[in-house]
Length: 81
Image (cartoon, rainbow, N blue to C red; front, side):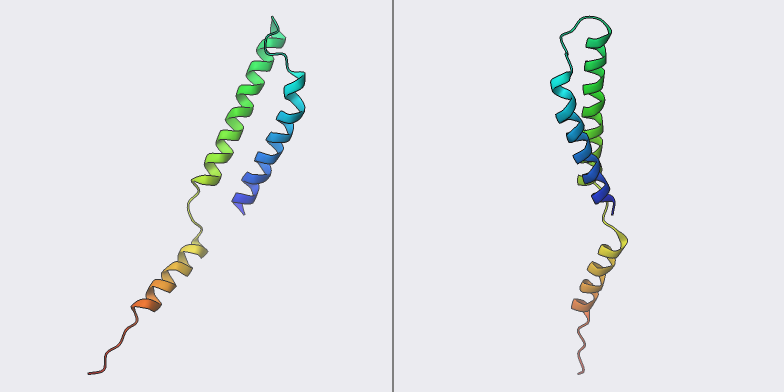
């Protein structure tokens, strides 16, 4: 569920960048130039945060439980001797 949220946030950030980058003038003097630079910096932070959250998220409990069951099933070897 969280990975889907991260992916949606990444797509929305990408859409905002696609829409805003042609309209931002980074080399303008004064407040508009500072705004463009800070907006792009915050957009980069948002993208980096969502990427790191998606790539380095711990596995969910359900997935770990399934893997433990598989390992336990393999270890169930009985010898009647």
